Image (cartoon, rainbow, N blue to C red; front, top):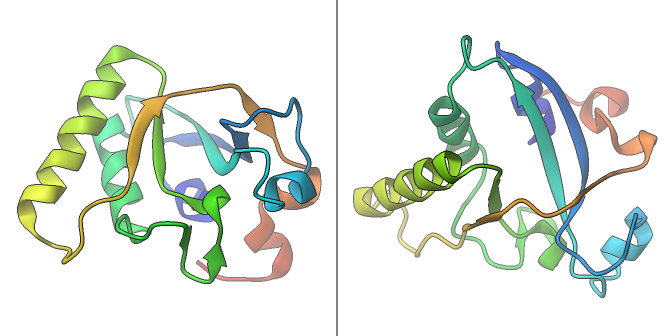
Length: 140
């Protein structure tokens, strides 16, 4: 997800990290243990004059399977569940409306599993996780 958002015009920075768990400043190994309650997340900063929150939501929905429970693709575990974290009441309204709109389209056979929740503390992941796809030579 980070590499996808990083390519968008108007996204000024991205960081990968962990949200929502019980351990302060967790490590990748702790999060992968599936015992801390954290999930892997991407934190975005963007210029709203160049890209809207609604456009970011569209990219989010089209970049993964929002019906998967307990992981994404080959990545299994609750740390890979699908969540939109919002920072403002306006973002909450837009995220929930976007999810409801997607549910009405019947684009997916299964229900949308993505949660919409207030943004908890974001713990930046280790440096080797930042821009992981680029460092690994992968293309997005």
